[in-house]
Amino acid sequence: MKNIFLLSCAAPLAAGLLLASSSCQKDATEAPGAVAPTAVLAWNQAGTVAVTRLTNPATGFFVLPHIEARVYAIENLAMYDALNNIQQKNTPYALQGPLVPAAAPDAAVAAAAHDALVAVLPDEKAYVDSLYLATLAKIGDGDAKAQGVALGQAAAKAVLAKRAGDGADAAQTPFPIGPNPGDYQYTPPFDGPPFNGYYALAGWKDVKPFVLTAGNQFRPGPPPALTSDAYTADFNEVKAVGGATSATRTADQAASAQFWLDNSPLVWFRVARAALAAKPADAYATVRLLAQLEMAETDSYIAMCDAKYAYKRWRPITAIRQAAADGNPNTAPDAAWLPFAFPNPPDADYPSGHGSAGGAATAVLQSYFGTDAVAFAITSNAGKTRSYTSFSQAAAENSLSRLYAGYHFRTSTMQGQAMGAQVGAFVAANALK
Image (cartoon, rainbow, N blue to C red):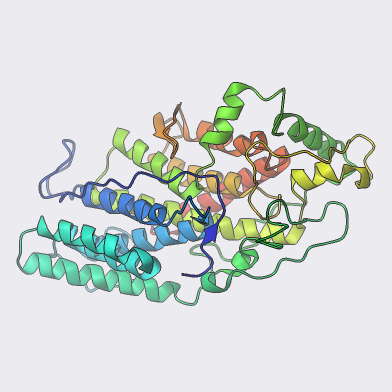
């Protein structure tokens, strides 16, 4: 696998997983003849477990969120196309028929997810194979099962072919480090051994979007000038509230910063599954939402990387340590300042990727549920649980958590969220209609 690992603060997810056939587990609210979402949700979770199993806390390597979102998008699109070629309820993504109405839905879902995951996560083949065999064993043998397996394999093949050569494997490219105040500089520990100047996936800006017309489609305007009042306010706020030894950060702000450290594609899947538990839907609607969600997440990272490359803005740690050179008399340097959740990700400040991913996910969820006011609770990798009364409440906390962690200026988090919301709304309106 190429370009998928990054030092991170996230903790590994528990690998336990139950896979069941929807033929033996139906929702009480399910309409006659509908397909229960059990297999879709189980394989959606299997994808997150497969990604997390690649985590190696001993060496500090984790899957980059950019890559994680693309993995999830491919897997869930494969399941979507498999089901949609049993009954065509929505626009296909890659597989354009013919319909196989007698195919067993669970077999189609399992084969599609299995083949997609093995292709994009070959190191997890043994794990995915074991889940696949366990799933098929729960489905009665016969023509329906065989047709379902063949259909799922065809769906995965079509989706993988459509994404082949999209630029993801060539996205680890050099990033230009500028000499001027405000320009991005490598941040600790990525500025020294063993990294010796590492910037994550600068070339992700050139990856082919799933739905956007171009990576710069919703590029925000530039960040505040270093001598502006807006920059001064941003600077002094993150210096005070985001530092490792902050005396002004509240206990709840600290808890929020730690809670939202998990990769966004995983967290927003948790939100979607929690919302679907409260407002269940059949397999077709469920997989459409999950596929849209991760297409929006992936495209938000492409848009984020485009904007980061365009503006090349320094991170707060650099800004605070080098404030004597910024030309602003109202910003005081602190050569020893560190972010609360050290280290910050190795890419530019503006705009926030976390904010962008949260804004994109929220727009898709709002569109699907037809409301923002859905209550849910989610639990982090570290076992902490937080509750929300709306998607936008979670998105706002997600964005500001990066300020409290010391990773981003407030403007970066808000502009990231706003850009992500545009991406998510575009995906919801134009994908899998």
